Amino acid sequence: MSQAFGGNERVSRSSHRQPVFRRPTDLSQIPLKHNGSAASESQFKNRQPPPGDFPAGMPLGEFLFEYLYRCGVRHSFGIPGDFALPTFAWLEKSKIENVTMTHEPGAGFAADAYARVNGIGLVCVTYCVGGLNVVNAIAGAYAEKSPIVIVSGAPGRKDREKDPLLHHKVKTFETQRRVYDEVTVASAVLLDEERAAAEIVRCVDACLRHKRPVYIEVPHDMVDREIPIALPRPAPAQISDPPTLQAAIDETLGLIRAAKSPVILAGVELARYRLAHLTLQIAERMNIPIATDLLSKSAIPENHPLYLGVYGGAMSSDEHVRKYLESSDLVLMLGTFITDMSMGFYTAKLDRRRTILATTEQVSVRYHRYESIQFADFLEALTKTKIRPKSFRHPNPHAVPKPLQRKERAEPLTVMDFFRILSLHLDENCCVIADIGDSIFGAVAVCSARQAQFIAPAYYMSMGFAVPASIGLSLATKKLRPYVVVGDGAFQMTGTEISTAVRLGLSPVIFVLNNNGYGTMRRIHEGGFNVITQWDYAKITALVGAGEAVTVTTRGELDEAIGWAQDSTELAVIEVKIPQDDISPQLARIGLEVAKVRGWKIPHRPVPGNCKFSRSAPGSRKDKHASQP
Ligand SMILES: Cc1ncc(C[n+]2csc(CCOP(=O)(O)OP(=O)(O)O)c2C)c(N)n1
Ligand SMILES: [Mg+2]
Image (cartoon, rainbow, N blue to C red):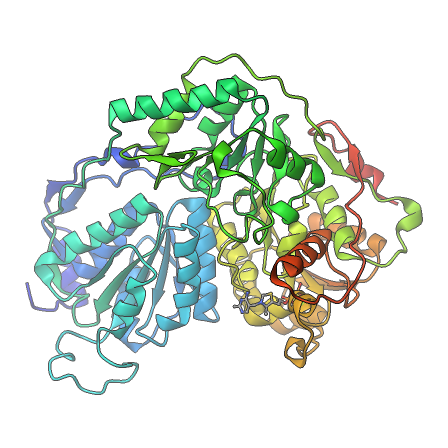
């Protein structure tokens, strides 16, 4: 088994294989039944357990990619290097399509968005120079629960014997794996043929189970070796303790029955674990309204009659949702990450005495915690309970932005107008991907007549996410066209991935919000460090040789440019010129309230008014057409 095989030998061996090992079904991976009520959820795929037949022996590289393929991976994002070339050779021979990116951070962000939609993603890189280059994006995937497998080429088993100074090595041969231990839930260095298959299965299963990244290091002299395929039994599915579950449900129901204005704060885990449909069933049965936070925005259909908006303290999408949540006598946080960002930098006012927090990690009712309860079981049990529907009057029934008036078309653009006009054009075939800066703060208010999807690194907040993420999204689903909203600063970090999108024939619509530098930082602390070089953004399509680009400065020009991009099947770059000191209402409010808490001196500028909203029936497109000249 320790001998490396040549290419021809591999082919002849594989044609004579006998299926021997059948992998038992892992019940925890079987998708829950779908009742069809969650429109947004149907866009995202549930993962089936991998089918079980494998031959008794296979080359390591062949098994690795075949196993990943059977777990749902169809694309890999990365950049090769000498230590990784034999692994890339197996990747190329596999059924998984390799996508070479311009830079490893882009590979990580693309795989992150791909994993959010597809249920699992793959990054393939070389040792340290590649692997360490993508750590930041993988750290974000860990923080926000996005299931990515990182496969890294590495020095060979033989190379490691006398601890030589090999290129790409940092401190020890273990350095990269140790760094990855901080940002993954499982890791393996495949130095032993006998255990390699089991290690791969262990890591991939951990990735799917915990929805977090895992790291697999493949020494270049191991990947061609024949390994035995004796797969371990999957870990038994975790089950809830029935009396504890019953006690938690009884207490929860008691609180819901006693509450006058209960509300659900739907969190990101509902999207990751494909459980949004259960939450909708609970809400509909009990007639309880639902809000999301920035990380979970669009997990619940935004045109649902019970949907209130995005809550996040001072960063909420509007004052109605903020007031409703903060005056409610029972907030059911389901799958919610409580982060400084989603709680509007400590401006949220939710009292623990009137909250229930249920996640994959804990079920807490007010001040105490129930152990041994599975989140899905808790939700499932709540859908089956009998309770008199609550009385609820929507404080702001589905509001869509005010149509663009002919007389305002020549007006200059502000951030608020940008999001208002963008919202007028969105429908269920669109996915807004927001980068960090005012792109994400302003996007809180995106609200369309027809449900669009939304993706953003809303907790980890790494700049440079959105352009490469549009590639991951486009490859994961053909149903959604990406509408990237990115600041000029973040665009300068990973905008080069437009070139990858062009090569793949993808057609994202990319808005570069050009406010001449780091606007968000400027709002907190003015300084020379917020200055960046001004690029001629509309020339980027000429540089990469495809796509169309335009610069807009007025509301009418933006409206026309979006219409033009929507009629075209080409990649579009729309540079949106924003006055240097203009910011979204969300950023302005946050700035003022956080400054108060932290004692910062923020330059006084008026807070832009909230978007003016008009009412429209869900599904109506008349506003969009009314906006045409
Ligand atoms: C990778 C990374 N580096 C630095 C930061 C800190 N940071 C947050 S917002 C911001 C400025 C963003 O500028 P731009 O993309 O132009 O958006 P704007 O704030 O102007 O809307 C910076 C530097 C970050 N979040 N991520
Ligand atoms: Mg900027």
